[in-house]
Image 1 (cartoon, rainbow over the protein chains, first blue to last red):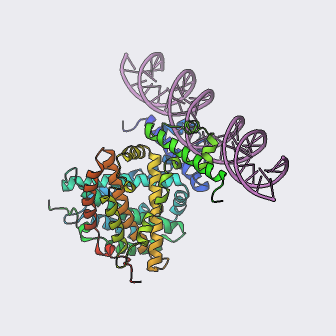
Image 2: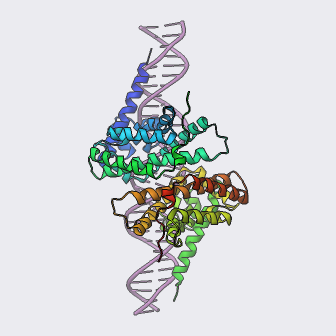
Image 3: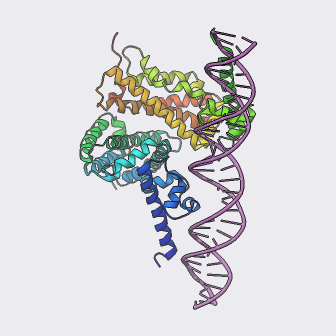
Length: 213
Length: 213
DNA sequence: TGAAAATTTGCAACGACTCCAAGTTTTCAT
DNA sequence: ATGAAAACTTGGAGTCGTTGCAAATTTTCA
């Protein structure tokens, strides 16, 4: 069988708890909502909530789970002749130009980001996620360039590229929380991306160019 | 009078609590030490601890209080003809070359940093501090360049310069925790600083050059 | 010296989180 | 189908960080 009853129920329960929690968080803020309230609203016990989610913060970031390898994916999938930084800049431009929710360009997300902005615990968690994204990227860069373990360059490059991504996402978040329109923000962030590319060195822009297969 | 009995006792008590706490943290790790234990070891009540320190993390970072304006200070104090990034690189080189405890180059600090490395709560706090450092730098850059409020360039430049500082401090910490000798780490970090300077663009290296008085 | 101001303390309570020992439900071989 | 095994849920008790409050205690200063 593809999926038994047990698996299905688990997935549903997990999703439901996460949805209920996110709803409450967006409505009243992260700190103002108690795990006990979430449990009650989701018709489960507090312990069940903790069975699915290690911490309260995880309830909020459940959806962003697939984001930890975003940069690694983008770089791995870049076409022949393109550098790592260029790949990330291109993918970011594509997402921004498409006014994609994946980079936070969606009216509904303003409330979502406001919750993060107001809860230090969530900001910390977001930073930890960014660190993971960067670590995964560094790993890819090490593989692709075959750099020795004591070479700091992949670390530095992952830092620069991670900074690009982080800055863009942060600026989008900041502007969206201000209540701006996604399209308008998209336009502005495209020029921000130009500014960012302008202040990167050739060294960074040409690191890890994908060789011909 | 310059300082009454009350003020003196407060300062002493505060210092004593912080010292006792740091000692316990270094000895047994951040999470393994309870605030109640700290209070008992310092001969005060738990409430008194909280009178002086808002959170448990603040007990640990009490010493690092003067660090939030480090970059702002460095940039503000740079000589005529020097850019913001150049000033930070120069100051960093000076501290590293001097094997200064201010950048973590001291055998005793290895244990200190190990505590941070092992406690997520402390790493978050350290990141928050770095954010403050960067925000203060951005403010200075805005003042000095007279950039309009909607100009993102000071934000980007503060990001790049903050990244330089953060990377150097992080690498020092990582190497010291490995048990390396301060002198040895100092030497390696000097070459790291060269690598970092090499991958920065002229645009960054020449931003906010101090004009002649 | 004695009342006002500041500090310390104990106590109760809240919320996140963990551990553990029952229940309950789902699975699956028979 | 069915009954034991495995997986999931639950309640309860407890730890720890943190806050609020009112009762001491200490320091200040007129």
